[in-house]
Length: 383
Image (cartoon, rainbow, N blue to C red):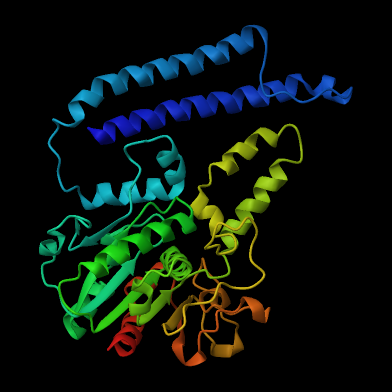
């Protein structure tokens, strides 16, 4: 029932946004002669056209309020299930694209950060939450998924790195499940708070604590470590190792291309209204332009360092190989140098030791999740 309420809200917002875009284009075309004479541009039309656009927006708003009014009282009485893998995947993708807007508008489809184990959310903060762990051990591995993904999607082609490491090395695998459309810094703050609660209530003394982050998950992990360092949260001092898989530490070219396209659309009055389409890119995606992990308004001139005492490892995928002297191209989304934390400017390097870097050739971005070569490195590093 909450899903239906959320979808209804999205439909109303879609109708309103489409109407605004159409009216903006209409107003820009009609207002061209006036602009040639120095008048200010306008985004609204007048007369019959303006009345029509307002009527569409008002009708959509009234319909949305009516639907929400009918569904809201039924939400608490509607049977709640664990959810299917398909629903979870669709919800994660939706949050990855529109997550900040879902959260801002209070849409029920917005995900809240949580820690999960064996597919179920851990009731962190409740007195008896450790009883939800099926097999706690002195070794803890926390996995952090990437953009538009969820905890279930660590399993790919029947393989899950965390599950295999748990069997081979005795780790208990915990997953961060989060709204990847929110800013990386805000997700880092939420992750840091959850980790502090997790370690405070862990039922056994910890011998080893490691974090494994894929793609954006690595940036969220760095944001959490930065938050914990700034606030002197104890959990970061217990962290032994962190492994980054295909993490765009210095940004992803695809997002930079999207930003350039948005700027180009704003150059003419006819295409300027379509800049709004670029504005739909959520905060998390925009952060990928430079790999931003803090709320600083501009990309830092120096990388935020990793915490002292934490052993960091980085794995980069490359669709090409070094055979024939060809340069490594990256995994299709993240360049090799970005994934390894390397940069031409020494101030921006993450200083991950070369002995703790690996490039896995013939491997795409998602292939890192089920690569046996990647798993062999993980098993050796985390043993």
